[in-house]
Image (cartoon, rainbow, N blue to C red; front, top):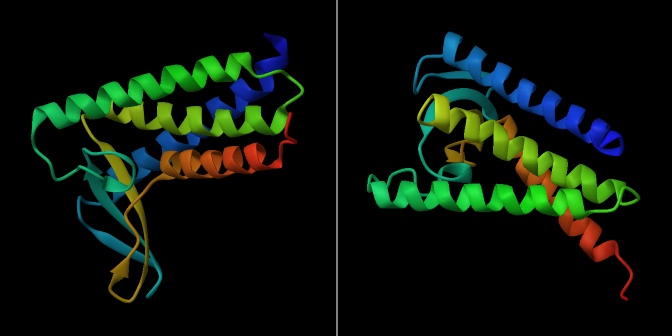
Length: 158
């Protein structure tokens, strides 16, 4: 357990950063309000996402879709936790990737449980062409997934 403590601290730090950022956005930015940080490129815009990462399925009001998303999220979380504990301590990059994914998944899960939605607020765009809104937790998941892919491709064949 002691060998994993640094990763638990990373997870806790990232969840805290995510929740603090979302709380600040909820407190200081009105829903659907936008504040330019870098005009023409980056805004802080508060939206409520009831769907999956980057807002997929957020417009679908059917309870079944949200139930399937919640079940899939829980299953994915369980699989990542199991894989984390099965990963040898020597595979530090793999453990870091899984820690990022866990932190992001838990950060968004906390929102879904306590708010009923996820607060997204990072809004990158060029002119009127916007990347889907996201948050710190989504960033953790995306970076962790990219790092995981890197680790898999870097491994030597057995």
